[in-house]
Length: 172
Ligand code: ZN
Image (cartoon, rainbow, N blue to C red):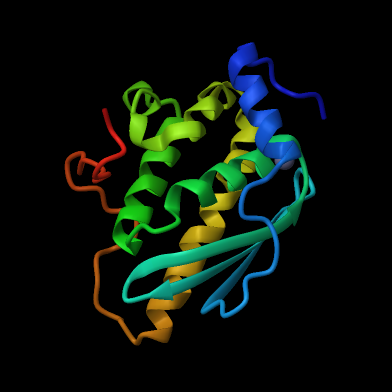
C-alpha cells in the first residue's frame, strides 16, 4: 500500500519513529497486555503497561506493520508514559478527534509528535493504522479497570463539552 503524501517534516518524524521506535520490547512486571490487529493492513501491536496507583508507570510494545501504525504506537507510548489513566484516555480521545479531521485537536500541543499524523486523516483507509496504538491502550486500560473490579465509571466515549487535556508542564 502506498504511503500518504504528508509534508516532509512530518514524514521525517514518522519515519524516525518507525525506524527507531521508542519503548519497544518486552516489559518485565507488566500488569496488563493488550493485543490488537488491523487485518485490512496487516498491522499488529502487543502493548504492555505497568500500572501503579492509577498511573502508567511504564509501557512497552511489540509489533509489526506499516510505518503509520508503528510510528503512531511509538509516539503514543512516549506520550502516555507517566500519565494517569484518565489523562491517557483524554489524550486518546483528542487524538481520535484529530484523526477524524478535528482541526482544533490537530493544533493541540499536548499531542506532541502525534500531530505529525494529522495529514493521515485525509486517507480513511489509513486512519485505522494510526489509531491502532490507542486502540490497544484503551483495551489495556479497560482490562486494568476490570482487574481492579471497578465496574462503576463513565460511559465509554462520553465527552463532556471539550474537557481540556491536562498536561502539566509540557505546554508552553
Ligand atoms: Zn497499516
